[in-house]
Length: 296
Image (tube, rainbow, N blue to C red; front, side, top):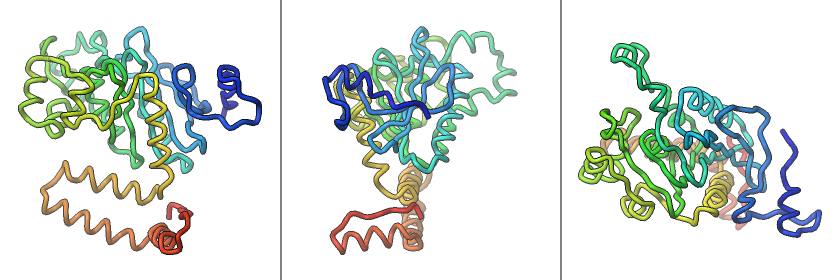
């Protein structure tokens, strides 16, 4: 793991060596260190004061973070590694202030044929992020369009910068969303609004997205990533085992009937009583102390 990048923080803020770094706005948004592996189209860092939040940044600035196959392969590799890292309790996915991701790479798919996309099962691996057990927080600044909007919706929680814009503009280029835009969007904001967005290619603002339930909270763009990391730290302070059970239970609500979902939830609830962390959590509450979770 690379050296923690606090030198610039201390310089910018006039702090003395030995002082505890905090989250800062604008120039330095978070307290982090770089992960070991280097990628071409993403950056991976370990964030938070306890280094328990994975931070993945999409990094194709010249293409407004357009989602090409190599970027998605790198993203899948990175989140899978973070998912198996016991020291990480949550993951934040972000882009730049100008664009979270402006869509899929149209140039890459422009000459694809029907048979190629069918035989190759095009986009099949793009939703790998939905299959990891740890919560993923999308920190969306700027444009989240097409595949970018779909990628944000694959995450468990969406925080948005105040200038963020969401949309599914595929209809404008003669196709439709292919990575969840017609399905996840409809489940979140309802048929009428989703149909309007998909059939017109129109965009909605962060404020509209929050009203629709697509976004949890809105922050000034320069504070967004720091706030997402703070949320990740709160989540990471709990039992990773129980957090994964809670995440799976909530996601099941989108995939089954209410009756089946309630049955699944009760089974998961019962299952927590087989864990050491449930016992520790309740004991700590009764004894009026902080719990010491071991993720078992």
